[in-house]
Image 1 (tube, rainbow, N blue to C red):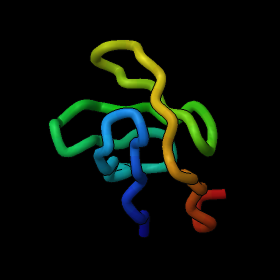
Image 2 (image 1 turned 30 degrees about the vertical axis):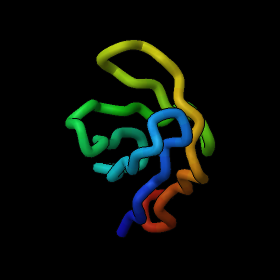
Image 3 (image 1 turned 135 degrees about the horizontal axis):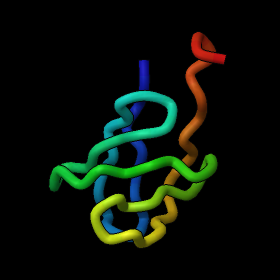
Image 4 (image 1 turned 90 degrees about the horizontal axis):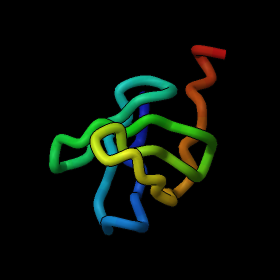
Length: 59
């Protein structure tokens, strides 16, 4: 199970779909780059986030 990730750039939440992809409340697809950075797949911009930890079941 995944918890919501806070996007500090947009003051928005990202709901993870799996370990690498998520969607924000505006429907923008986000790709996880590392634990604290995602890339907006629509604009190509990087966003700083709260920790996006990997699901232990998928390691």
